[in-house]
Image (spheres, rainbow, N blue to C red):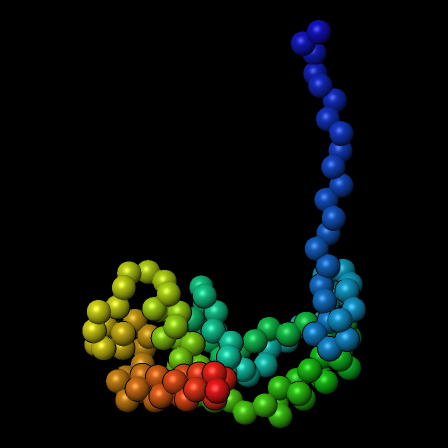
Length: 128
């Protein structure tokens, strides 16, 4: 009556990788990965790798095509700085001063001001 219960085995679906070029899915062990410079890449928990985006492809040819596409994109330093500022402003304790923002982002005040100006100009273009 109170013996062992037999549990049905649940099959755990393996997480598939997705090619950043063609969209094909494949097992993780087949992935060809690399990093590209990308000023929009700001990682929530890894500030040392800000500005680098991990890319995944189904083959070396597709990886090189993804890398080539990123080489054509401009790396905008102010975009990277704006991302760092955004991360600080949306995590942890509130920032009260420019000095505190500089300490928490690793940027100096002129760079912070350039990032804010870039962000505001971008918002104006997107909004109107």
